[in-house]
Length: 159
View 1 (cartoon, rainbow, N blue to C red):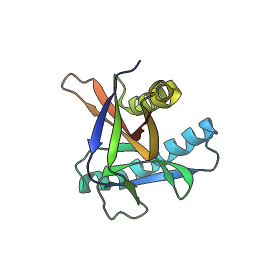
View 2 (cartoon, rainbow, N blue to C red; view 1 turned 90 degrees about the vertical axis):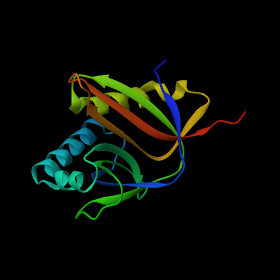
View 3 (cartoon, rainbow, N blue to C red; view 1 turned 120 degrees about the horizontal axis):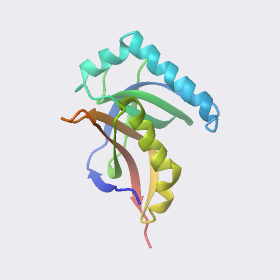
View 4 (cartoon, helix red, strand yellow; view 1 turned 135 degrees about the vertical axis):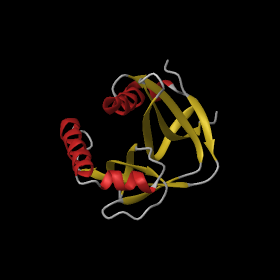
């Protein structure tokens, strides 16, 4: 069983991000390509750097149900004005926090996401994921290794 913890967030918070909507949630290859293209676009045009400069500099990969559709993007903690970005609401409550480490910054967020949704969630029987979204950050430690965490809002299962 993968290591995890539960952290309680006492107030709703917002994240500002650039992203893409998925028409078919099960089109893994197509969705990965759309996500990579969006990341390349906002990196090359400087929009992600502008957003990071408005916030604390920490980038998040965000999965969300936006306007009733699956959405994935890249953004920051907080509410900011940025052309083409959306502001997402995250609700107060209990959050499942899943850590991970690795040598590759670009793939670590996807590795943690895959671990959580690829089998870990069903193993955690005392909590259930309630959304509406989740976020993952990755940062370098003092040894040049990368550390990341995925945060998902959950509800304790009564019973």
